[in-house]
Amino acid sequence: MNDRRNLYFFYHDDLRNQITPLIDLAKRYGFHIVEHPQEANIIVSIGGDGTFLQAVRKTGFRQDCLYAGISTTGKLSMYCDFDLHDHSKMIDAMTKEQIEVRRYPVIDVTVDHGTTFHCLNEFSIRSSIIKTFVMDVFIDQLHFETFRGDGMIISTPTGSTAYNKSVNGAVVDPLLPCLQVSELASLNNNRYRTLGSSFILSGDRQLTLKIVPEGSTYPTMGMDNEALSLQHVEHVEIKLSDKKIKTVKLKDNSFWEKVKRIFL
Ligand code: NAP
Ligand code: MN
Image (cartoon, rainbow, N blue to C red; front, side, top):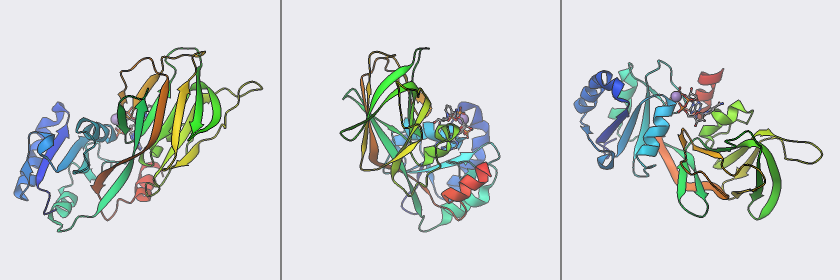
């Protein structure tokens, strides 16, 4: 890690006391602790997967930074490869000449032809009222289906083990740059029909959702663990981003090792 020495810690204030040993450790190994993420080329989140998602979002999905997650729960998770109380793995990573990097795909979401947002886990869209939510779903230019129900989740490979998995979506290897579309309680009968199963799109395709005004047009939209503070929406475009999130590749943290550790 010789070329990266400026380290920023991202954590919730109540952890402040527990961080001191980490700061000392990093300094001892020649890292500079910076006060502002803009000055960093390593960003370390301390907490859980939720904290890691926030760290990436609040620092702007930086392409010139390496991200790392330190778990405070005593268990490693999808984005937390280090344990707060086990310094040996951190020292290992810090003293390596050449660090191997893992790249996680990110989703780009453009709402009403305006701003583009990024998601590391998933973009979710669901009805915010009791009435069903209707959307025309397009794959590239093809009108694929008209969805009626609670909503949809569009997840990245690393997000496939989160919300997507709770609705029976498949777990997807992050070496496949793709997006997975999963339904939330679709209506299926003689009048309304959707595919019914999750489907996986190649990273070259675009998914477009056009909200049909006959249903609710005030959905709740989520980017990972943050709600999008837009209310009315008509048109959402989702595709794989050019951006990737870089993390540290370690001996024992392949994606499938993590899946086994977390779920089996
Ligand atoms: P949260 O409500 O604490 O998250 C729910 C759980 O999901 C937590 O245990 C969290 O781990 C875990 N998690 C987050 N990302 C994961 C991933 N990529 N793979 C496996 N587990 C993951 O909220 P949060 O911690 O801020 O996480 C936000 C995420 O929660 C969203 O992006 C969404 O995927 C997920 N979520 C799931 C459901 C559901 O399953 N019904 C509903 C809403 C949101 P930590 O405890 O380590 O943070
Ligand atoms: Mn959490």
